[in-house]
Length: 280
Image (cartoon, rainbow, N blue to C red; front, side, top):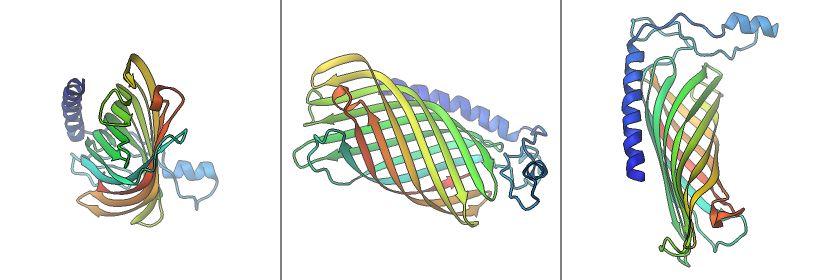
């Protein structure tokens, strides 16, 4: 199943990659969703800093100089190191320690903020009594940057997530709970710039997964679960060739609802995050 999903995501990425490259070199339509003057007029104050939607009235392929509201086409990506500890809703775990997990993202974005990215997450933890938590996921996601100015950055995305979830008392798949499946995922990212280099950020994701589960040897072909992620922190960034190089430090919580023990029991991962990457 994982091989088939990887192939599907590969072909989806190739198709969207062609769209992004083609769109990045075409002439932009003269569209302006919100102007500074309209925002100030509505607020009744000339001193108000506007929250302006991205201006598509410039074209990076035409030789024009983009204004403050124009994104630039190119590759985007990030690498994250997460120090997470598992928690169980009914306290059935022995004492897990914090353990590193990894998340990597790579994608391509058009000059108007529309892009496609692939994101991979992997976490494995084993307690002294051989209890273990083994979770990995793979996302294919289309996203768009909606607001990008000196004060705010807002981005949203949606796509498909593949999840491989296992919590057990030993390596034996029949000695634990698992859920393997796919479902829709949505993402929202908000940044509030404090200076030209520093900002606060919040990222949230949610997914609904359906697939096959195993409850201590009892196979269930049509199971469902949901998961949510929240990451909060600070970001430092600097311009580089029309993009931003950034570093982040933050705190993340992941909640896996009704996946442990195939009933109302839930699992959480929580801990610190260090990240770096390139953002358009």
